[in-house]
Image (cartoon, rainbow over all chains, first blue to last red; front, top):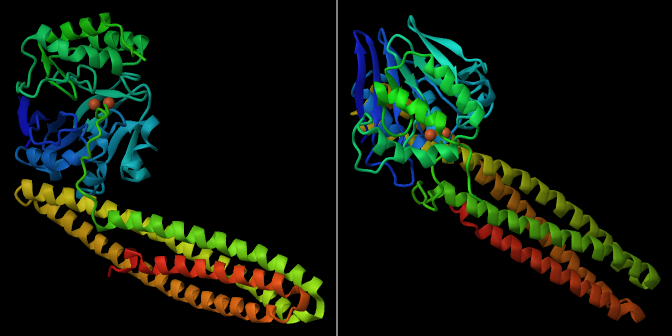
Length: 246
Length: 210
Ligand SMILES: [Fe+2]
Ligand SMILES: [Fe+2]
């Protein structure tokens, strides 16, 4: 079973992380799902794969009423991000799913119809959650060619999709990065291989270094907080990516 | 990102609908075999018509039967095309059912783990109802297929009678009798092969289910 942890709270404004599923089938990569809640409404971020839907749904239900989910945000098209779409739409057929315009006609292969999607233009867009403005921040080619991160300026939280992801050993249970140097070893091979463009990476590092970020939340691994956020951005900036042997 | 490539199945063993897909593939193979045999009869009948023409008035009956066998091959070909259409529809129906089963399985798990969330229970009920309707549609499809198969079986019986009659007529072909006998024997053999394939179709487990 997955666990839901609240890592930011300011009154009715919350960020929840749904993490670590020791019972998931071995062949599935572990994922983090996030929910940002504001005034009783929630936006579910990278809702996850179909096979982990039961675990995500029940973990979320323990902290938040799933009926209050107002929308889904998919950073990109991968199955570990959004193949649960058909199930969320079974639950609430009217849920809008925010996703890059590039994928709006691909993701319906997982479920949904044209009406299910709000296409995000390449430059990004503001997403309103019950009065809270969230910003879809472009992160194209990191790794997907139509890719967005989500910034909450009020909470100073950046959801960073696969950027910052680490494939941690099964025993690592901490929600936050505790020892940056030890942690980043589990992130290096991943970023070298999955991130395809040094140019895009440079642009992203510049873009996000201008944002005020307390917590950087990846879709796999642990959350970077405080000084580790800048440490990560600098590390990523210096890393040569788009490397594959073969 | 995508999960790493491992040769491990995340899905449990195939259910009845999953096995149906494999059976449909088998049915399709038999249909293709029968269509090939129908094509063969068509060519053989054409040759037989020319042979009968050369044999002249002594092979008039044989000529008529050869023409009838050509008509038979064309009828068989179009009957098999109809069967193919139904089979394609069955593939679509089975796929929808497989999708239903996956959704039901995951919704059931979500309902159970969440301690009976009311909205999930509703979604589950709605999906189960759809699954039932899709199951009923597939059952109708099976019956329709069986009806068409029964018609094809009758058609093949007619082909068998034509081939046998051609054998008898061949005997009146005087100096052409041995050649005509050989051709009619081949007709008989091909119709027998069609009957065999049809028997396999009938026995397919796909039709054994309700
Ligand atoms: Fe991805
Ligand atoms: Fe991922």
